[in-house]
Length: 368
Image 1 (spheres, helix red, strand yellow):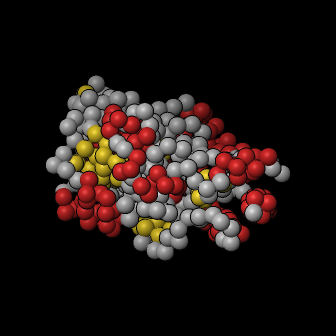
Image 2: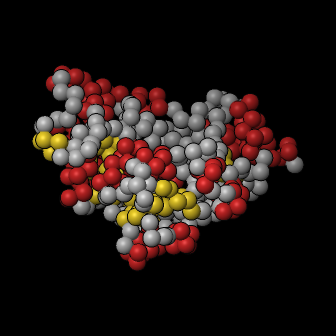
Image 3: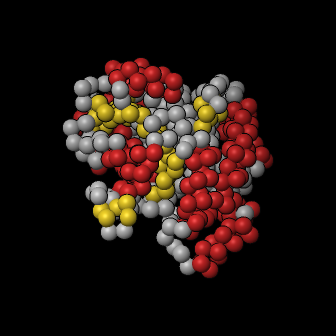
């Protein structure tokens, strides 16, 4: 049996007729920038998340940068970010001229530790950027309380958490604003790069829209130093086609994640935490084992792909290595060499999960 970490073909084949029709309609109208498809998706996605506004853009990294720029974050400012995330969380802060200040994560939830946030606040701190990593919602009540106490912005990085909920609210609707990525492998993914920003602030929404369109409110009226970062019309049509299926896809992800947890519970592995009052989007199913390399190689020999998200904590990247020390982040660095992502996507079959679990079980029995 050959099992890929992701399989985008299965989803396309399930929705082939709808997707092909949506793409054909854009081509028929020959309107490839803006238009109804973009406006319709922005309205639908804002409604889905539970915010008043959604503004599409070129990708998830642009979404973070534009939001920070619109909030006035720049040279001399600091933004608190988790030590464990994809590089864009921190590089977007650097791109606007500010400094990312790293905070350790919670042991088995992989999200930023609120206790560490307050310790990291300085006179230069302008914003906090919680990342709902792997689809797991961060501790938003504590984060929002700290932000209110110190008058800081909260920008949620929801690149891996489309549809995840925290105490009944969709992530992305809790902070002052939020960024999303629609990279193809995301829970809501398109056929290329795309992103979006959501907020309840009408002034902020207007500003980010201008910044993503050369800083202009009307054609040739350039009021801000902006850029070209717009949601492509074809991608918007694809996203609108997929959005009605997102909740069901997330339900299937959680079901498969629960099956993994049941089948692997008696093995010497650390599984994702039980989240209690929140629902994960289960973008990734991540285990921890001290035998990661050997297990990954064994699974590959048996036709099963795995990956590490992410092999280095952000402060250890060459970009930031000079400014942070390993001992400052004991929790994240303790699991850095143990995390392993198993295949998980809505179209993955239960028999495939059982096969993966059987092979993992056989590995540990053999090793024991």
